[in-house]
Length: 396
Image 1 (tube, rainbow, N blue to C red):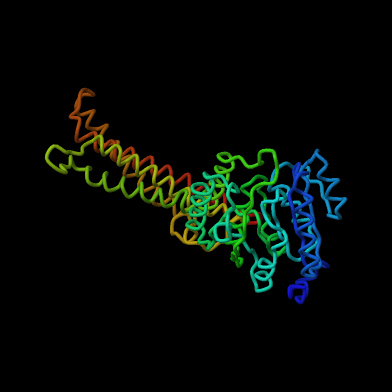
Image 2: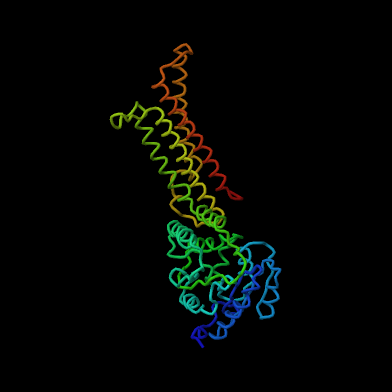
């Protein structure tokens, strides 16, 4: 018997561990997975349960689970994430180990996961690249492109020290994950768990685990491009900095350099290479797009904090702009005044010319810059009001 049994069950849960398996027509492999899980509990003296979260099986999976003594809950909402969310809520164990019921993971080798939980981890991720991937167990596209790229993005965006973002075998403290209020119904649930755990400051660790070929004769539920996009979309939506702020600041910086350089006239970069009004238009466009993206970053972060999706007091929340409605209306008014002055000057020049033809180059520069200033002023003013709406609370 393992020394895992020597640890008392954390918290007040009557059980130490729930081994949770999402299931949708897994009759070919479910019995083997349940048997391995039950053997682990018996061999290591761990008081626990095997819980199958069924997502509408019609192939006898439910009967198989019950005959083997596993607990079964019916999940009416379709999706990998939906099954796991309901399973986490129904679990009686203080710890949960979740894993696919297709025989790709070894439920008899869970001791390293429990050890890390006992040592203070909130979430323990399996790492298949460190533990070993059997031939044919992972598609080449997933192994060398999809998983490494998405893992790299997740590590970069959220500063998570994890080398396998999409390993389906992971363990966690039940109450810690319940407090995250996970909501993704699809495969992106795997990313949501890591991202929200990192944002909440939970302790995340990894242990090597192995991946075996899927034991089913049918195609897996995972759809490479659809589910890959859902993971990427989630990572972007939870990182206003990388989705809006950094691209916005880059675009705005390039735009301002072009606009300032070309405001007074063309710029000759080299013999035969000259930037003129066309480049000024591009510069103003980049400035406007960049400013809007940067504004979106602040508003998105503000909204996420107001909804409890992200913690407050981030850098974006401390920027001087949008702290109050007046913080945006004052610079918007100044920009708007400058822009309208430029437009008025252009109209006056046209009037002086008898509403006829005008000298193109110099006046076009004035009008392009003036219209851009008015557009930027409108963006700031509207965004300021939206920020104030987001900050509005009942009774304030």
